[in-house]
Length: 593
Image 1 (cartoon, rainbow, N blue to C red):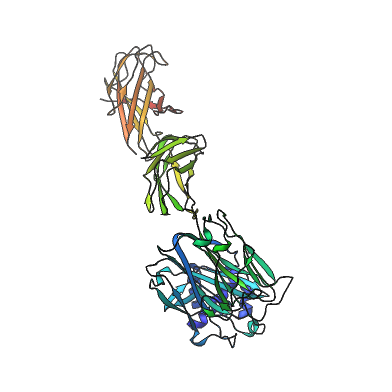
Image 2 (cartoon, one colour):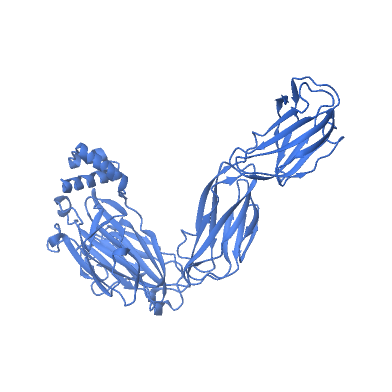
């Protein structure tokens, strides 16, 4: 049952990826038990579905004193191209210079038929990180890929055996000689005896039967003396045959780099995709070839052109690997660490860390840019060797020191003020650029989202007590207590309180204050009612806390009804003098007996 279930699952996965599930059920006569449906539901949450054919584009880039090696083999018999090789496995060898270190390794496997999303490399099961499907003449072909760096030996010479890969050799494929299965291994390594190079891996899955496929590899700056320093071009292609290279649609079989044919004794012009791999030997239906290209490189160029074409032979391209001697490289990255949330009408500090991943030292003048907007403005910065300036649209910071390989610049802390118009959520982006060429730009920009909230003083209150008790009489002493309450979990500082006393107050004094607050009160005839003005500044309140002050009114000049006392308007203003929050309250008179 497990093998049958695996095949059925593969068929359904292929159907789902092509949104043709009903047709696939009919075609494959798929009958699922409740157990299989349950297992399938689990699979769909843990296995990445195959996608349709993808353009061959840049996926990985490396820089340093490095090169790469390839190996691989076929999985179909050379004398019967519809059946699997003996024991369902084949091997290939990688030879590395002594004292090399492995930078990365990728295993590719491909075949006719439904996607096989796993392979076995030297006894270890490898699951595909991505699988592509190409439909050609109504039949499906697949290409799978996984990183296998931790499975690669650092010894000078090692043999790798791949098994567990399926391909469809049924009559649908076999009758027209388009069944195949194979694998390829790419190993990128560092060695001090190699010159500085950039190695770019472009992969995907495309067929170019009776057509041509033109690629423009870039992401480098070719160094001077490139012919002497050397470089390599390599490709991984499938289903090429030695005896099927006639013209079709005006296209013939060829592979060119910068207009020059890439050939050798076993891969002649007009028959480069012939089932012979110059890295290992005869490989029926598989071509893994590499060619020296140092003499074809032009110093200073930042891109090249490769052209794949074929006539009657149906060929699939999975990967192109190019190494070129490069100008000095400093691969920079940036990280952003901000507060758990931004606060409106307050300063918010975000920390930025810039790292140089090498291989060369980044000279001074590395720059960090932070676009502004959404109510944000620059307040200040802190960072050794950093110098920041700002416009209305961005903060720009320059680092005035070099950054050696695998080290970080000193921390940069940028403080931004969020005004009252800042929305409830902001996305803060930061980017780093250096002076030298940077071969990996995907980590040069970092974006982080922050929720934005405001401190709330809306629950602040003011109460009054007649110290003399009973009804309020002329000459009574009234005591006001103002409780400033923060109820949104944000500490607030620099608050100012302004209280215009009501009419008919003869005198007042402030009898208690929050710690650290300053009194700036004015006697009559100040204030809106000419009875005095209570003014207190520099008030600080912890998050979800209350700060209070008391004001004693010495005497009243006429009787007041023992019903209610109209209290004054309370104005709370932060230290930046932004628009005030005004609270008006009508509170009942409280008596103390």
